[in-house]
Each structure stands twice: as C-alpha cells, then as structure tokens.
Length: 210
Length: 173
Image (cartoon, one colour):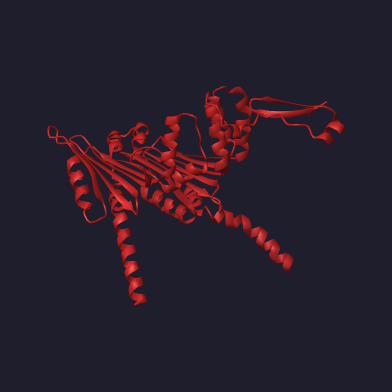
C-alpha cells in the first residue's frame, strides 16, 4: 500500500509542476494555432549548448556575460505575432497575467508608451533567493510577443556576474571576491602526487600536479 | 474597551491604507490609457537588486546603487495631452491624503508648475511625489521607500525622464 501511494505521489508531482503555470500553458495552447502566429519551444539544453559553443568566439565582455546568463535559462516558449494585425485581445493577455500572478508570478517592470507595452514578471523559489520562471510580454499595435522561460538563477550568481563584468570593463574587484589566488598544496597531496602548480586563464583557476 | 481600541486601530490602518492607495488608484486609472507613458518598477525589482549585492568602485555609480537599495517602488506617469488639466486633477486628489508640500516652483512667464510632496512614516520620508504641469507635459513621479532627499537627486542622472531633473533641487532641502 505504501509503495502504491509513493508511486502515485511521484507520478503526480510533474502534474503539480505543470499546474503551477497552467494559465500560461492555456494561453500558449489557445493562441498558437492562429494564422499569423509563430510559436516555438527552445529546450534548455540547446540554449546551454549554444552559449557554451559561442562564448570562446566572443570577445566583448557584455556579450560574454549575456551568453553566460543565457546558459542559466531552461525551456523557453515563444509566441510571436508580427505579420498581421494584433489578433490576440488585450483581455486575454490580462486574464493570463492575472492567472500567472495567482500561481506565484510577481510584477517586476511595466513600461507603456502609447500602444507599446512591455511587461516583465518573475516567479521565485520558496526561499526567494533565485528566479525559477520569467515571463516577458511585449505588445504593440500590430505585434505581440510572449516569452516564457524556466530557469534557476540565483541572485548571488547574477551579482557575481555583474561584478566580473565590471572588472572586465576596467574596474578592480574588491579583494574578497578575487578568484585568482593560487592554492597551497596540501602536505599529504604533495607527498603522494608531487609538486602542484596552479594558473589562471580568463579568471578560471586550474591546478595540475606533476 | 479593548474592542473599541481594536476597532479604532483597525479603522486607522484602513484610513492610512486609503491614503497610500490614492496615488496607486490614480496611477491605475491611467495605466492602460494610450495617452500616457507609464513606468512601474515594483518593490520586487528593488528587492532583487539589493539581493544581488552589487558593488562598484565608481563613486557615482555606487551612490546610485546605495539609493536604489533603499527604494521600494517607482511609478512614473507622463502625458503631453492636456497636461495642465491632469496636473490640476492630480493636485485636487492629494489634500487629506497625508502628503505635505515640500517645495513649489512656479514660472510666471511660462506658467509651468513643479511641486514636491512627501509622505512621512515616523521620522523618515516614505514617499516622495513630484508633480510637473507645464504647457508641454504632465509628469507624476512617485518614489517609495526610505528616501534621503540629499541623495535622491543622483537618480535624475540615470532616470532620463523629463521632469526628473527637478529632483536635484531637493539637495538643498
């Protein structure tokens, strides 16, 4: 009996996760078949792979930071309507936003200029120390775009990224955050593995033994 | 007696809530109006910035970050359509809502008006409200949080909103 209950709970868990973003799911499924609507899903592993491949070929620090940030983004759904008139009613968008708020999304920024509107919402984890979901809505007279992403982005990591970006732009980091201090070899390790060397490349510290 | 005190406290808190919601109500009234440019930065955004623990050696940038860490919200409402009418409407909404006039600047030639109002919570300024009514534009700018008038002028350099340059006048208050 216990095993059955445990299996049922494990099977229901993914459904619970889906239920947390049901308003967004329903909105996506409802409007994606529209004649002037483009939609696609980008898996998280593809974003991670693209970022990993691209970073070595990019020199600008801001672009590198953006690619490192992108690698933290998981599965992303995009709904895009550009070619025709904006046939997704504002009432439907507002209904979806209200539903998302009930499921844990919080308004972050709203900017509206005439008919152009940009609305960003986020969902945090229980400890409120990382972002679990991002919802971006952009609408104009004849354009609408929704980007819904899953992620696991900690504020501490973002802060560290910004500090490293400032360093690469010429501002020195405070001493407490420097990562390039060479490691001292442990006496036991030295006895077994010989001499240790450490060096840094692009802020990453490597240690090899001889 | 306890019930009366409890009821009085409840009514007072509801009254205060009504006062603090006056600006929010006015903002929400025109938030979806195409005639207005709207900017809303939620308390969550400022909370996230403070959690990121950002530091920089640039004194000016660090001063701006320090101000942002003490903020809890930002609302901006601007329009170029009948600006003086909206300025008078916003001013008429404020009496009895807990706002005190800090400074008024009026240009007799152009008829432009700039008003700074504050709402205090205890011994600190909880909200700073800037109203600009000129022939060209109406601006309502509301900061909430732990406001330092001597430092808030730094934000005018990063906000890039017409009317925000008046914030620098507060440094002398």
